[in-house]
Image (tube, one colour):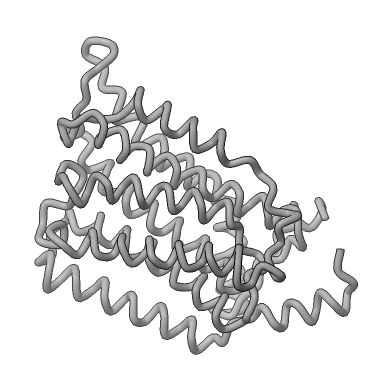
Length: 284
């Protein structure tokens, strides 16, 4: 437990330069617009590519936090491990097969390239958190068990996957990636609830961009729901559609409370915002 003076000092250190955050947003927004207009030619399916672009932005903001502040406080290694699993499972499908790729030109290379960038950043963040800057890692608060989550994601994926790849293993791996990405937010929220209850700027932007990514992915899946097929367990019941849409909905519900305070903080403080979650502060 930090003293008031220590908390104030820590909050000052944890503020990333707002110009760097603004630059990161600007670069990724410019890239997203360029991909939409010049690669995807404005096709609706590029919403899926926009989804992975915003996910990549979320990890870039965490890298910015770590490099600019010299600290990984507030970052959950267990959450990153689940993200690594999610990206690996998704790439195992999208680099070999096209069942879950955008049908526009962005699905030929850009989609996978952005995911590879995200994967590399997550690996770097894990190494930074567990090795180079371990002294600032809040390991005593990052205690939510993730192995049962990972196993549960795989088992559920084996039962509920679609058949867009027409390869059961790769269909299950893609679905595992989706489920793992959804539950990956839980260790991050758990760590925040067990520490100061204060979410610093880059960490809050990271969580928010993950929500934006999931929202965009959900929009695409909702529009494509009639095209999603599976090998049904019950005749006439397409279990893949509610599984996929339900996963997106659960992720957004988990972040709904955070979203309210995030928007409020952005309006009042701008991009260099810090959020104090009341329910988290009460726990501490």
